[in-house]
Every structure is written in C-alpha cells, then in structure tokens.
Length: 341
Image (cartoon, rainbow, N blue to C red):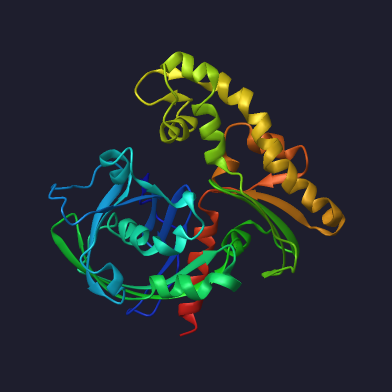
C-alpha cells in the first residue's frame, strides 16, 4: 500500500536535511517523511548477474540497482523489492520475517525500495531514525548497514543520490510517543507484529530492565494456519497463498480475485493464535499490572478483525494507526533531533 496522505505537521527544519523514520517490519516496512508515508511488503529478491530480464516495478514494490557508495558489497547488484519480488519470483523471493538478521542484511535494500516509491528526486539527504528490538546488541550493525552515501538506479532509468545519516533507537519508543496519554509514566506495549509479539514496559522513554519478552509468533503464523486449514485446501484444492490471505483480512476476507470468502476459517483459527501470542504477553505483564498506567496494543496484528475488542476485555487499549504508530513516533524523534541542530 502506498499512502501519501500528509503526516502531522513537522515544523521548520534545517534545509539541508530531511527528517525521516524507518521501521523495517517483518510484514510491512514503513518509511515516514514529512510529506507522507510509504508501506511496502517486506519481500526482496536479488537478481543474478546472468538474468537479462527487463524488470519493471509491479504492484506495491520497486526495482533498485545499487551502483556505488558506502556499501561496496552491494555495488552492481539489482534487487526486486516488495510485491515486485513476489510477483516475479513467487517460488524464490525472500521475506524479512524468515530471519531476524534480515532486518540488517536487507534493511538498506528495503529502504531504497521504499524511497523509490516517493515522488522522484535527483537526491535525498535524510536524517533517519530507525528502531530495532535489541538496539543494545545490534544498533551498530544496523547503522553501518544504512548510513552513508549511496548512488542507485530506480526502475532501470533514474540515477539517484541517497545520503543517509541515521540514529537507531529501541523498538517501541516511537509507538510509545504517540500512544501514551498525558500524565502516564509507566506504560506497557504489546506489539503484535508479523513475525513476533514483543511485550515491553517503559518508564518515561526508558525500557525497563528485564521487562521485554519476545515471542516468535506473529500474524504470518495465523496466515500460514489459515492457508493450510483443511477447509481452505478442500475449497482451493491446495494450500492458499499466505500473502493473499493477509491481504484478504483487510478486504472483507475475500481471497485474491476468486470471490472466495474465508471469514469463518479466520474466526475458527483466531482463538488458537491469540492463545499463542496475546495471552502469553498479557500473562507476562500480570506481576507488574498494578504498577502500570496503561497497556497498549500496537502493530499490524492489532488491526485484525476482532483482536482489539478481545484485548479490551483485559484492559488492553488499541491505539490509532497501530500498524504505523512506531514509524510516526520515530519521525517525531527525527524532527526533534534536527531542531536541536
């Protein structure tokens, strides 16, 4: 999905740098700029040197060629990003969700693919704030992967200079900034992501020691379960495409262009999925529940039908724009940092 609706007003900034935020999610990667936001599926595929096909951007994606720059390891390589990778290479495209290290290994390629979907410029000079769920251990690696000068070609024709200065912060800090109500000090976040469920407690903007719990269960597990459900296989004659299942969840449960509606299967699988992700997260918070000002549900999973209503029964509140809240908050951090310059 590409949504260039205006983001919140960001004020007057130093003219040489544009504030930006980057959240390379397991399901969707989110780039936020003052003029709007880009969401692309977190898919990628490197084009091998002997492949002479003339690729073009299809669906919600891009074609990116890295010409030269700080990432010499990428020089001369070409990448299909987002739905472009899924459309051309259905059996061999990669997903960020397949390995935690993918957020670092393929983070720049995904970011450049998102930049390729913005109104085209000859050069981008970005001050970027990005997040990672263990920034203490991996912030240096992510910063090294993203930062620097990069000369790239978009869609096989437009040569663009991308200069990135970046700052890495803890996952959830951005969502915290847009969810916490005035006067709230100690707040818990349950991030129902595509590949993980991350539970964290913050006091102010500081992550409390030993408060984070990461469960490797996310929305894509629900999609896989529905795709392989017995009724699904009986109707389609084969397992479903998990990508089309995920899309269908936001489109009245219609699967692709088939007009097949799978809401009853979703309902039957939802309870077990929540028991594997939301319930353990809620239980993790119980020993500290009496000391919390609020518990907020964020991430793309929070937007799935019935999820927020079920969570609310335990006093867990969904925040608006829960899928992109972290990136929205990170943009605020970028703006604030630039104003100090």
